[in-house]
Image (cartoon, rainbow, N blue to C red):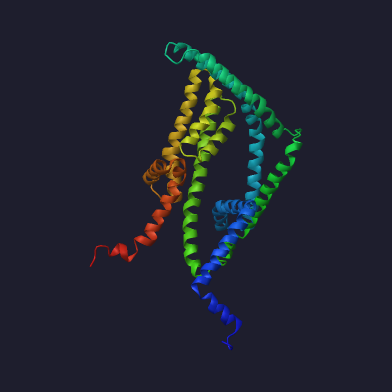
Length: 367
């Protein structure tokens, strides 16, 4: 015992299973406590890494065409800023107009539904339906006009003075700026970020963790990128259709479709409501045509764009994508629909990589 060094003693203690178990329990408790206190910082870092993760394939594509990563990141910044300025410049007025028009649209809807209720007033339970509906919708219109309109007008106007919320706004801008700046550093050194984190884990865990991380990243990353492309396509289709029909605020409505299309099926239905309200003053024919635009977009996005783009990004056939969505929506509702395709992609990859080549698969039933 006297001849053993301190390092030997520590190594002998560490080799005891209960010591390692106790150490990992304490480490987990400390990590949990710190994560609660640093939740904002951790979330900002995760958002930054997610941004770098999503655009990394584009930077790799540029590198293959002999454009250095630094120039690729710079090009990406310029394009992103140009698109942001263009969207803000184009859509701000349309969003304000859409909010300002909501009370009038609700009033128009009240008159239309009131006429319908008058015709159905003989049905039990629908007596005085017009008066009740008018009171309800007028109250909603008054609330919108009183609360949303002044708030949004001040938010987007250069002369607005929201001194009460200035600190919150500055904090949000600061977090967003920090996240974007950190994302740029991740983009520059993307190939070294993963291995640097991996080296913090025990050596015996690193190979399995690296494989699982790669599998999950490819499955979920491909699906997210594919879904964003499908949403962009659906938004363009809706905006073009509404512009052709002369519906006001068509670009803002197209952007709404692009955002809500992240929610399978339900998102497009919700996005159609303001467009239908805007079409009401132009008559029922215009309403039917607007519904037709959204119906066609839904069919194109659901049956053509999604299976093709998500199928390519996930290496699943169009039929498998549709089947996965059906199973996910049935088992898990909205969340199941969101996770269905990446989970199916991950399972397919694991089956092909680990199960099919395994001895258990090749010798199943053998002697």
